[in-house]
Length: 117
Image 1 (cartoon, rainbow, N blue to C red):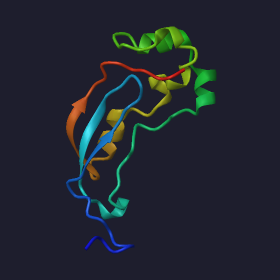
Image 2 (image 1 turned 90 degrees about the vertical axis):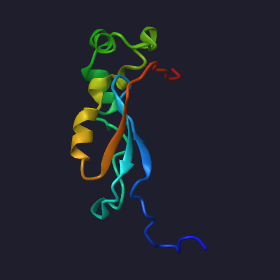
Image 3 (image 1 turned 180 degrees about the vertical axis):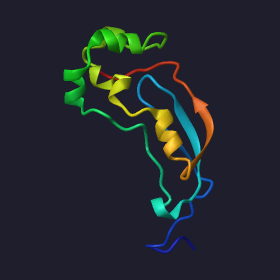
Image 4 (image 1 turned 135 degrees about the vertical axis):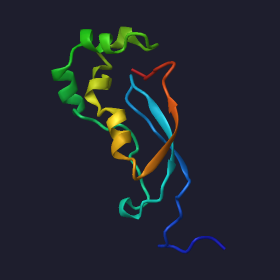
């Protein structure tokens, strides 16, 4: 029969992904169906700095230092500077602030970062 147009689709128990930045963790989460948030949750860490602000405020050396131990395109760091983890909100703060929206199920960390540059 389907769900009538305009009705709420139940989201309690739905699984989702809340990704961190290029250099941080991500989470598989289960929705809690919080009506006050329209049954939604953050879709990622979110930016703390705009892309332009990131390029002006951050530098390649500290970006490379933040990415130590991770497989990524370090040779293209200047082109990827707006992806510096410091340009994004802290994913652990986002998860803490989302405790009434989602329940973390799996904590993921990246093995490889790749962005077409």
